[in-house]
Amino acid sequence: MDAALVAGSIEDIEIQLLLEALYQHYHYDFRHYARASIKRRLMQARVQLGYDSISEIQAAVLRDANLLPRLLDFLTVQVSEMFRDPSYFRALREKVIPHLRTYPSLKVWVAGCSNGEELYSLAILLHEEGLARKTLFYATDINPSALKTAQAGVYSLDRIRLFTENHQQSGGRSSLSDYYTANYGRAVFDKSLCSQVVFSDHSLVTDAAFGEMHLISCRNVLIYFDRELQDRAVGLFRDSLARRGFLGLGSKESLRFSSHATAFGDFVREEKIYQRTGP
Image 1 (spheres, helix red, strand yellow):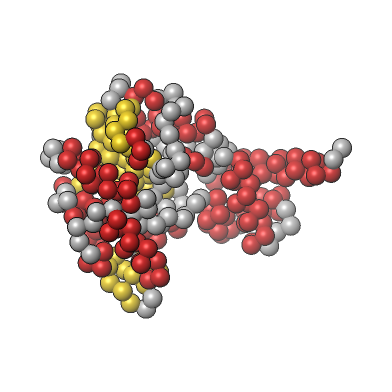
Image 2: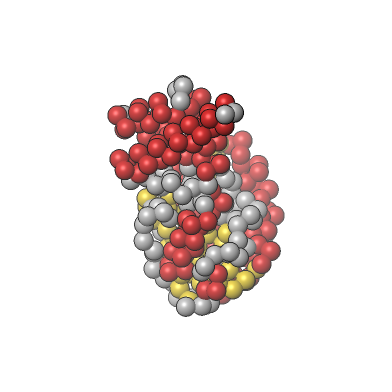
């Protein structure tokens, strides 16, 4: 038998056992994440954490809970930017906001908020559109350290140029510099942006729906799930949205193959913005 095939199969078994161990012992469920992505990230973890095999990581994390946060940083994707894909935010501003204005109060859920870039982008957008005071945000993620970073709202100053360009291209009505203070190589965003934000540990894999959301933004998260888990998450969004509420996905994500697709209609097709229409 080909040695490479044997090595690969053993590695895959180790990964499966590690994911099962994380679920059984810590209740973090990565078993239905896209396996190629998980494998790539675990290989990075093995090298950077200094282990010779995935099995060694499993043994270590089961006996030392202090290793878990470091491993979660590898297993959860924390790469984003403010106003990422500016055309998405421009579509929200020009086509979704007019509908949101008709509600006396708003609920917005940023699912998989990572380090908070998407949350602050939406908070700034709604502030510029005069809707911030009547909006309650829910920012959720499974990674506690990511939630702490999001709540702090502190980013490296060398990222601000890109954030500013994105904001301008999204149709920003003010200067991004109005919302942060720069010092010691960091940009600290105004705490008032989070005055109506609920930060919460929430898993799209195992946890329940939020009720009566008017907008859910969950971008570049579903691409890391297998088809079964994608379907579970879309069902969660369906159950969480108010009728006629909006769902925004990432540019490489779609509802096309979901069993819940009939509950949504295309609203801005090119920007993957959907509207809850069906039962």
